[in-house]
Image (tube, rainbow, N blue to C red; front, top):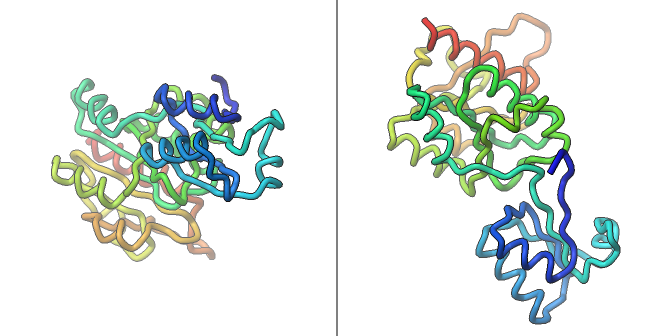
Length: 246
């Protein structure tokens, strides 16, 4: 599929995309359109937990590449998403304790791409992102990952906090990055671990943070008080690598 974000336009094409099992990130529907085929498509979208956007005709015309959208445009990921189970299976196949990246509020595609690249290089088994308020696997993400997107599975979940709770029951514990935490060098970061990174502006959400076992801070000596999200992910990830290798 290359690095192109896939837009699917027209009622039959969109409906077939859903029925074939293709992962659809977002669906744009002409606001007020209530005929049978459109209702069927909206029902499929809700069944698959696709993000729905009801927009006016001008917005649909702007998004359309064919100018024959028939009131519906679906946006699919440039690459297929994995399941969380696939990521855990990768760790098991390698005989390694799971090492996961979980990203909260990362909306910049360059940051996501860079983090996927780092995850691959530091031996993480996969990346988990939320469905909402987060960038998906777009063309820019794929390019910024420098090919890592082909090797490091990315799973998309409805609720990051709920996913963390489920994974904790399976023996994985979680550390999130935050300036108010314990210096990372003073933490034991070995074993099955999930590294939680938030955006530069908002950081990790309150509920996600409350579900983490540890909060780690990166020592900073300069005049500003924050790192780019992808850089922070790299710094913390390689402290985890260092401890896993010790």
